[in-house]
Image (cartoon, rainbow, N blue to C red; front, side, top):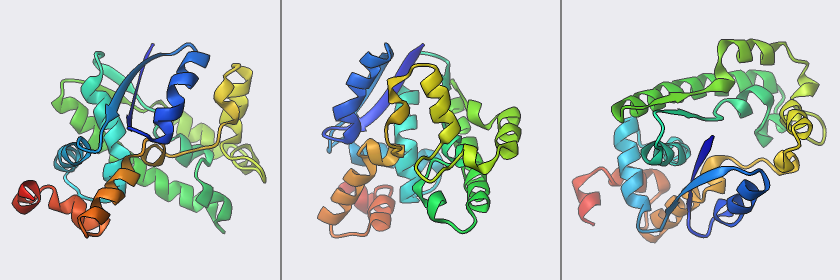
Length: 212
């Protein structure tokens, strides 16, 4: 199975994914974005999504880039694993993590619908194995300590990775928009243009933004 990833030059993923792919014998295809590439792909993503929400755009860019690069007609993503199995640090600090996870899952499912439409415009399909009806039912029936413990998040998924002998089972969780360097680069460029992140992202689809 061929794997795809996208990151900005100099990011965490740029430094680590090559070695991780080798350790797990993965056939990896990389899309590496330079600083000059970022405004263009942000603009494309905003237009595709129909929203300039910076966090949603930053999260979507690596998937969008992988869809553009993929040779296959069907691409699978890991979206939903964090929402179902407690991947985000905020869940450990919440008074009601289960409710927060359900709210995040609803948002992710809406984002998944947008990604499905984007894939369709490219003549491709995108699948979300973690949010199949069976997986959602399974996750909701799990004891909470199988998701988050005092020292670990996504407990069950890490246990499965250990059983499979995957070296990445003990790596810290990093969301794609952060590990890929996309959000950091967006913030850097917004700051250099003396704009808030939201204003900079929105400006890229304005005529003024395109000519500036």
